[in-house]
Length: 430
Image (cartoon, rainbow, N blue to C red; front, side, top):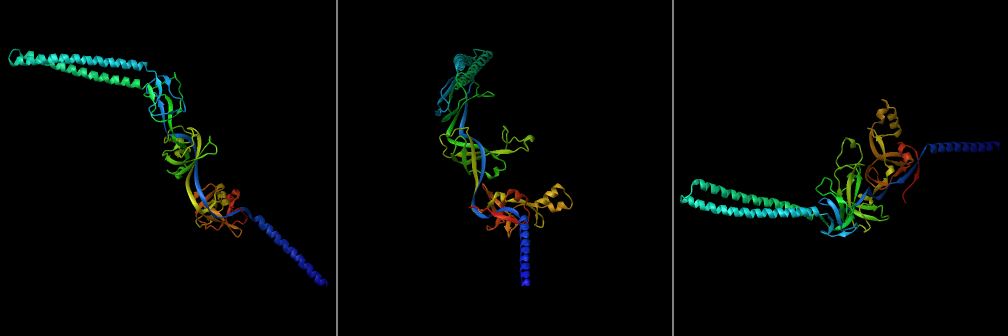
């Protein structure tokens, strides 16, 4: 009986010891596993968007200045007023131009009177020349007298021609003076709205032919509005004409306006620079650059005004039901010539303390990929990516669609090693 009890006790003790050993091994294995978040690869709709900021502008507008210098004596419009083509907008003092026009008209009249006198003298000289010519044939005058009459006749012809040319010259001056007089009245070159009126009656303006002419006002066609934005140089390759855009205006909260890309700048603009596009110098060689992109708006609201800040979300690509994974799941690893993954720790050690032994192991080609989970272990799988969505990225090659991949955490993915044992926490999309 004692022997039987002894065997039972021994079996029990053995079971306890075996259980303890198993528990210790399970605990040790659990401790050696890396906690990761995983997700099944699935299909999704992706939309790639490029966002850029800028301001609202009318597609067509004209900055209007005075054609002549002087003081503004009348402003016939106010800011925000609708105007027609040819409508009077303003008048500049015209006294000196009126005086100049009267003076030039008088000079033209005087020159025309000179033509009449010269033509009368020419007629007298012509008659004298004809008589002298007849008398020479009849041997009543000498050759010398004839030559003198002929020379006088030609001189009178030249005087008439000179008087005519003088009239032409003075008439041109008179036309110029009359034109300047007409330019003292400013007319609208187009139908639109006065969107800017920085001048007041009584202020001086500088004419258009001057070095720095004055802008009196701006007339804009508000029926067609656009947003001019600056797109980062890294995104401009994805932007093309005709792409759809959605515009959000800061001052119009909650309103989204549809638009279309209608212009793309061909020259880079140094970020923060006020210079013209394309003027890259040595000082801007390493400076971030942008490209001007114009989005023409469709059915803009009546409350939209030029100069408002806006953000354009340009749809550069769309994909329907494609394999997609979270962006952060795609990591970069070095793969050596044998196709084996170089763990991040090896690369870091090689960078920190390069040596003949470590350097060859750290060398390899960088490839994008994801960590696929199988039987509690991860393996790096190189992938080819496509369209980048808001939170997911398209996978063109490398995955079949039924694998479980590591999606987080970001810190874990940075240091996760090939063939690492993991403890997965599923985070599939609902």
